[in-house]
Length: 566
Ligand SMILES: Cc1cc2nc3c(=O)[nH]c(=O)nc-3n(C[C@H](O)[C@H](O)[C@H](O)COP(=O)(O)OP(=O)(O)OC[C@H]3O[C@@H](n4cnc5c(N)ncnc54)[C@H](O)[C@@H]3O)c2cc1C
Image (cartoon, rainbow, N blue to C red):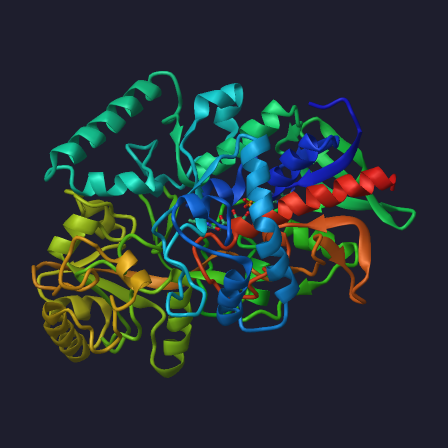
């Protein structure tokens, strides 16, 4: 509980945007508090891959990748071809590097470049093959002490043995565990460490990916003595003398009024979990299920609107898309699995529509794939679509929520998640897909797979496509014939990885009203602000990169406001 009722800055939401703002502001000498609605800290940042896109970041030189602001802007101009929001994207490129350097120097947030992770449109001018994206160093959660159980864990399907996280760079060791001695040694080492950690903790303490990012942010707040009120729901904003000056909040100890000398920051993660707003802003065909963390029900947008803010939904899309498979487990939990990088582009699978036809290169970014689903659906029913593979593929790469080397497929088949049949014709019948179309499609695909040239959609022909494939597979890392029965499929629907429509702001993240005037004392960051990419998805980490950058800028602006004595 807290005894103080007055702060410089009140931050609503404990994800990447909220905690970054809090950490920087506290480090700059502001008195801050973080309010979190749920019982857990970290929001979807904890669920995420933890990829942080920051072009021209200062670690790129050491990673041997040249970049500069003009090159980065040229790439964003090519991939987000609109004047709308260009000032925000310029600000992002100009200040992102500074924000990351600041966090690396002053907080526990330590990021390193991912040397090979190409921009999503590698053929566009100014693209880079890696290092624009950063990821957190693995984090030892024992440093969180009693706060560790309060950190939101990752999506269960992204952990092994019910609590062990696996870093991106260790995935290939798990895949090759029975084929390579070094891989076996690495897996054995990680597994033994995990068993040891579980003796004293509720899950593994070696955090990687998004959980390492939220863990590191939380550690920074603990070190800076920033109070965090969990299970506390903001009821409204208070306005006094023309500026937002506090909040009404329901806490476990009862309702409270907290005053903000400088302002209030909305960082509640957008509206992924609001059915009402999904209906309002997203296409009808989008899944009603989201993989996003449960707390983000659009509260920040509502609070912003009541203060006179405007939600801008004039984006190419109002959500970041991913093809997603959904099923209900025996224990009643709904699993929402985004097919981002693990299976779609790997050799030996294809995606078809009801007509049994492929409609796009499967090895494009998840957002592009989602766009392709909507586009194809206009001509021929393609939502849902079907991700189909043979038995060898399923064993080697897994399929959606089914991890590689799964012996017992029965629970997935019983839940109607995995459809299995001895022949492609029988699988088509099971799926309600036109079998003549499927047989023809697989026939052509198998022929192309042998030659290594996807004559239909050029899968595997650019560096990002190859990245999604299996670089150890030849002649084309994305292509292998579907041959070994039985054949399997899961159903794909487009769902969101976060929302894009958000509050209209200026380059300091101050919320603007319908006349474009600043609403004094009110900021928005993360998914509560309109995405600077306006519905496009240029590269890995384009939500967390801006969340960290603009969180940093909110804190810097708030410090100036405090100095001015507002
Ligand atoms: C599976 C998956 C993987 C992803 N991987 C990546 C990736 O690698 N890189 C990337 O850039 N993006 C990724 N994303 C998207 C990314 O996770 C989000 O865009 C980002 O975490 C949003 O940050 P945020 O701070 O805005 O919100 P969040 O991190 O979601 O935090 C918002 C917090 O606000 C709380 N809240 C909500 N309402 C209230 C209220 N009324 N009062 C107080 N608190 C409230 C929520 O409970 C939550 O804790 C991924 C998304 C998914 C689904």
